[in-house]
Image (cartoon, rainbow, N blue to C red):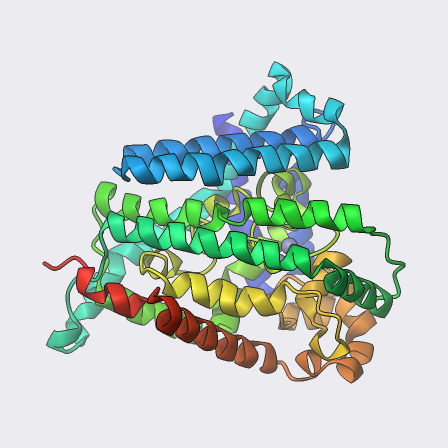
Length: 430
Ligand SMILES: [Zn+2]
Ligand SMILES: [Zn+2]
């Protein structure tokens, strides 16, 4: 096992290096080699794999908020309104999709052992990101020295502020989910439009799409279930101070997000797709549905763990700030990238990555790698460019995402007072 752990870890490093060099053969070779260390789908059937992902993740979440000192009120809220609905919603969805007998295989001790084996190897992949994280956490505080006095010092918020923020974000998630249910015919028509554009025959009825929307909405909090306790862990347990300079770095990264996603997210996203057992451990929940809705968390259940909590470099710090990440992610980039609007003008690449599993691993804009190697970019590019300005103008998804995020943030600030500005005076002061 130790040997397999090390081989997986080194194989993942070699894969990243091959991708950065643009070495297609090297990439395929490492995918092949790493895949062989994992237990395959015959030993770990997909429904059981997904059920075990869901149970273990929620157990780890409850354990972490208990261990890190979140309040009892929040723990109770999280258990009753986040964790239990998520477990029930996921298991019902998996039983609907794969049958009850397949779901029950999650109780088989041999299946559990294979899941544990794959989990350990997933941790070997995560180690790559933690090596980068530790480097980032160790070096970045020194950047303070080049900043003026007023931009030096700590910037962090108490757990109580994070709890209120998370509970409010969760309420927004559930209300938005209800809104999508009420407008389901519109999204179904949008799904059909997108499928026809990709020369595919639409195969979903209302029941299946409603089940998928229920599943997406029930699992939406997962992103914050991981990121919020992780930030507290890095600060309070590992002892790294979160400084103003980290937020400045996060702002720079977010302004150049399409570039920074290419460094780590794009190759890791491809790796998680191509190493099939890892796909089922880390990313499959994001693709298990045929449709896509803005109520998706944007990642598989254990995906953020696999990426060390960050698809680029600064996300752990970014997520330690209340309100901004929620509105920026789900009021901007995810709202634009994860929709099936019934309008040709809003057709875009990431929707196709979901509904026809198009081989585009960057965000919403094909990368240089995609332009060169993607089958689907070559197949659909001309047609989609004529159809949608979102495909024709690479800058447009980010620009519209930015406008949406700022609008959503302003609406919540002025209507409900839910904003970073309103908790600014509650930040920790040293
Ligand atoms: Zn994907
Ligand atoms: Zn997605």
